[in-house]
Length: 126
Image (cartoon, rainbow, N blue to C red; front, side, top):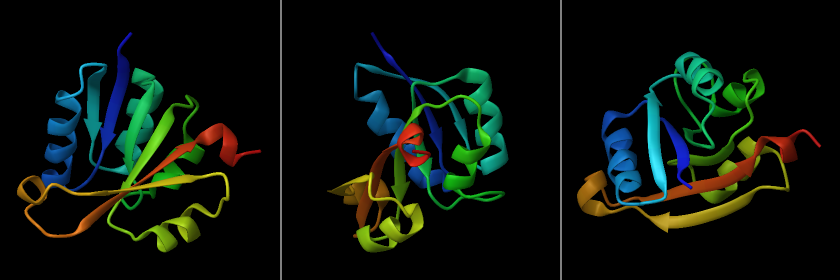
């Protein structure tokens, strides 16, 4: 079974990097992309993806506001340039799991570390 995945990222280079990453995983299938919060809410509810790769800070509304606005409740991997401590403060939950990984320097064209948080909306509301 393929995991239906939506990318939500406002930076074109980061969106392309996520797209290329997802294309290399045979159990993922991309169903769409959004570059701002309002488009993300519309696409999440319309496409009902299994997984959303969601930037924490995007135009129109934050990634957290997106999750509080949608009816469909997909699994989420937050993508962000924030460090782990800042991300924990933004998420304001102890039920989050932080996964740190190095960004591919060639793909991102910068020497910074990438961060991702795996978070399920249903855990946030408990």
